[in-house]
Length: 116
Image 1: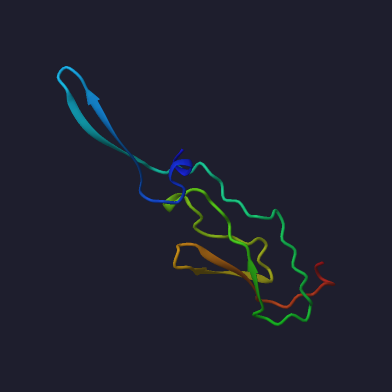
Image 2: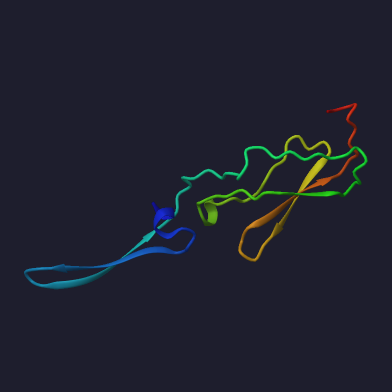
């Protein structure tokens, strides 16, 4: 299990030596372990509740928790999707460590009488 051996370190490799007898031979072996997409992304909480007033200003931002994915590289989290998107849009901000900060941005006014 690449994640158990190397966590988020890339590349992930095991180094060991083999000694054969008759005739005696010494070999250095490196096994590079590639990641497979065997972990689904998860969030710390199953549900996030925002209490937003109808008078919230268009452009208001609400920071969302990042998804955590034990896989790395091509198999890690690449994006987020918000459904339905009637009033909000998502904005992603790339971080230096390769993760993304996620914000939900109010794009249309909220009306509790139309939709609770």
